[in-house]
Image (tube, rainbow, N blue to C red):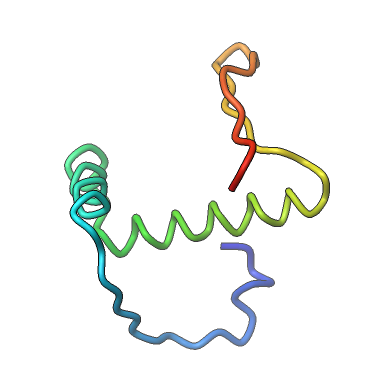
Length: 77
């Protein structure tokens, strides 16, 4: 997460309910990449934060292949 978002941040435990679909995704991330549920959620929130910050600057979110070609765009996030 960008350091400006962490300045003065304290650590705190957060709990929330998750549907079966979200739990399945978290389990798949753990199986495929060795990420704990907590780490997956932290990374997702960081990615969302970055995407929203860039959106405010007038940029969009796109998926590009290894050759730099756009293969998908996210229009709403």
